[in-house]
Length: 285
Image (tube, rainbow, N blue to C red; front, top):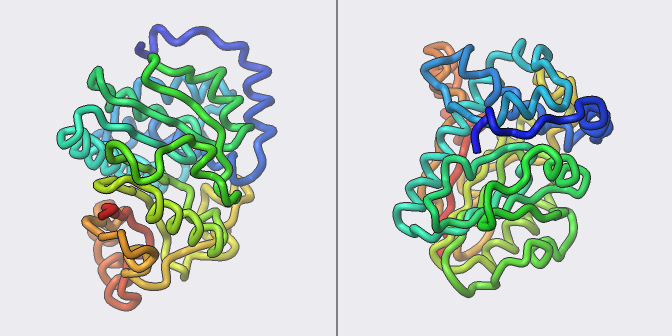
């Protein structure tokens, strides 16, 4: 199904539902706008998302609030390309892979990951899933949408995922970690380490702890009212979260924006021992 075949929407109820989202769920607008409008801003980073533009329009958002923040738009594209690359690499190793997008928002990664045998579970808070069900229904029977609340101890059970049994999982936490408390994020990592089948991969983005607190410095986040609650204190903190974790890759997201950002990113990493904002890939041994 491509953009041309997406069913027409009644815009007013959808826009009202999107406007009613609380601060943290409302941050889904930022990556949605990046994938919908970022290709024109940064053609060299284009992701060619077939669903984002129609979905953004359906919630009554013209994207103007977000495109003023060029750094975030570029960062969304860089993040999307990196996630897609990691997922497609996993799919080459496991042609019947099960992708689990936790905190999926209004993204549609299955458009790039459906090889005819793969499965996709998209999960988010109930209010987001209710909106998603009206905008982005499953592409086929191998894709499902479920509700999950990562602040609850039983969130793995909510996803109905196996405990150390079956094929490896590709787990994605995009734009999620920074909105959890330190205790909640510790629980998430420990649960994945304890329950994910061997060979599973976890991909997530994370800020440095120095970014936490009021997000007034972040042009897009301050439009949502969300704040950054958690960040990494050390570069090895993720790997140390569980004995089964092994850090296999990472990427400083903003280092590729231009030479000035490359120098700033290198300087920050040198001083802090880790990037200000980066993608991380953990394997589960």
